[in-house]
Amino acid sequence: MRSLFWRILASFWLAIALVAGLSILLGHMLNQDAWILSRHPGLNTLASRWVKHYEQEGLEASQRFLERRKQRYKIDVQVLDDSGDAVVPGTFPRRAEDFERRQHNDERRLPWRRLTEEYTSPTTGETYLLIYRIPHPELMAWHRESLIWPLSALGIALVVLTLFSLLVTLSITRPLSRLRGAVHDLGQTSYQQNSLARLAVRRDEFGVLANDFNKMGARLQSLIGSQRQLLRDVSHELRSPLARLRIALALAERAEPEQRHALWPRLTRECDRLEDLISEILVLARVDAEQAHAEPVDLNALLGSVRKDAQLSVPEQEVRLEAEPGLTLQGWPTLLERAVDNLVRNALRFSPAGQPIEIRATREQEHLLLSVRDHGPGVEPEHLAQLGEPFFRAPGQETPGHGLGLAIARRAAERHGGTLVLENHPQGGFVARLELPVAQATA
Image (cartoon, rainbow, N blue to C red):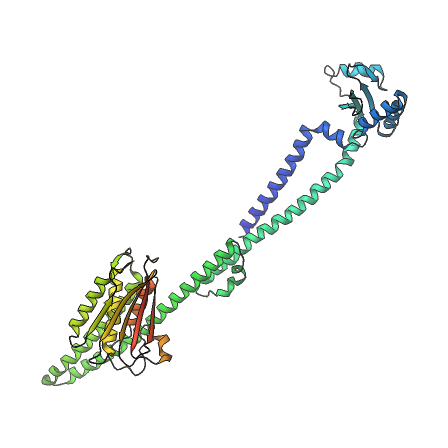
């Protein structure tokens, strides 16, 4: 960041100095005579005051006025009228006129600076041409004095502009430095959201960037934390079936031949449980890894297929379906089918015999609401917030399962930009409700 800091600061300063220098240089080159006439204290009001003396007091009074000016500012003045006749011939000797005419053929520099000015009388309308001759030493002395204030003002301006450039540069490089530190901390998994708190309150692009970075950092930390927790949960859940398999194998090795045949069904059952657990873990991982593009999904057909499969697997349990016609949305049909199937099978495990499973699907504005209700015992209110977390099972549950069905349904809902709401039904039982937007969610 130090290199960027000095580049920006130098660019600002050089641009300002270049513009100021060129402005002064061009002003001197293009308007030098006009600048002297307007700034020199002996010239800036001389024409108007001489005409006033000449018209009101006469030629002698106007000449005395010019003599006083010459004594004070060393300026010789010659005045011509409209016809070119000399009103005031000037006090320079005649040979000076000849010397001036030969200036183009003479390599020597004239000892004075010649300036001309036309002035029209506001009272009579007469136009006069005033020719001024200023000795170079006097002009250079005035230049030195007159440039003190512009140069001082320029110096002050450059100092102020340099400080302004410094502030602008710091306002750019400091946020970038904080963002660089936040990126470094994020790479080292030590990112803290409050590290960009001061930057996030800004209302410019850096504030927007800091807010987006905070959201990204929080999301990444959440994903990393959930992945670590998932690995811990998976390793914990896999230990139980593996331990039971190891015990069954040890018993089979020591058992008599006729007793071994009784242990094979137990080994087969433990292998099936392990295979089911691994399959559900892979499904949970594929929910986040799905890379296919979203496509139109016929929700009525999907719900009918899920209901048919559930009815075939548990013929004695009634599964009711109430859905509005023409329900469609943009999404991933495989994920949606897996989510709804898990919700229905979860309801089948807890609903008592003779009580139906109720599936309802409706549309409210830009969302589709899909609910699955059972008539089981429900869940204790203090455990509702933890439902949907991988491998979580409410205390007291005796039905088989690994606690991944609701987690898969929740991940699928989030992938579609929706939510999964889990709650006890007011009239008894448990209800799981998917709220999905009709438009395609971002992947």
